[in-house]
Image (cartoon, rainbow, N blue to C red; front, top):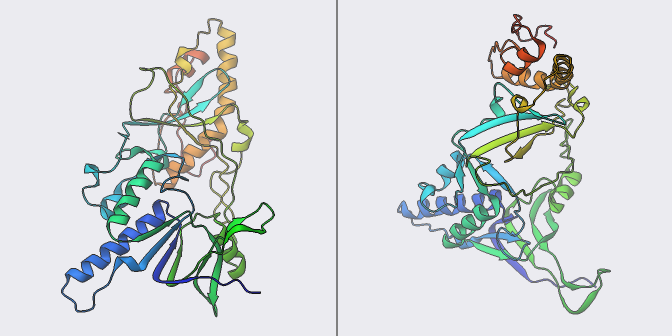
Length: 349
């Protein structure tokens, strides 16, 4: 017997109350307000916008700290600085290569890792703040409602069926069973993330994967307590290298034209103050040379990433390799190298 479900109608249904879904809802609400204030006879209402959130509260599933570029937020919420939960403006960006016993700071920070003008934020707090603005604008947010299935009409999507409540571990109805709602909408927006359950079903059903499908890896997040004074507020470090083998950086930094980008990089944002090579105390001349050669070998594949990043931005950088780094010059007991880097040339470390 078919399950009888209560039906609700909306103009726009947004699945997912993360930053993207809430921004979409708030932008639509702003457009509706502007439309109604224009003096038109046909009035619209933000109450016809529904947002589904599977968590108990807005921000419950946003666990990440983040570096936020405020450009889009400034367009969405003018004068956002007065109310948004902004923790710290970024004051310094660095890229560090870890070795087992020390670290090396790149002489330039590649453009994708430069964060001037950005903010260090809690994504959960930003999402809660956005949720408050959305609700104040009149949008309906349904918490603890996850999308279970997509509704189709012909080749188009007509809405979403929410998850049933009161099921046991085997998916069988219990005494408190309540069937999910059938939410129908003229426009359905999937903002549940690229690995959301409904998004994956839609991609499979409509064959939306292309020749360069997204790949994913397992990420590990650590929260560290750092001694006061070890790090300046607003310092952002992108780290790579040890304990990951540098062999993984041997792929070409950018493989164009090609089906897949060849970037195989492990970049981890960290707020750890680490000692650089200048702090190492190596008194023996031969030991210095051995360490310098070893570090050159480790840095070489990573340096190519920096070289290609600079090339893509049209920058011709003459950093004279590692010669400008005083520790390398001291370790090798020679003057800085004289070879220059030329994009596309056969410069090898």
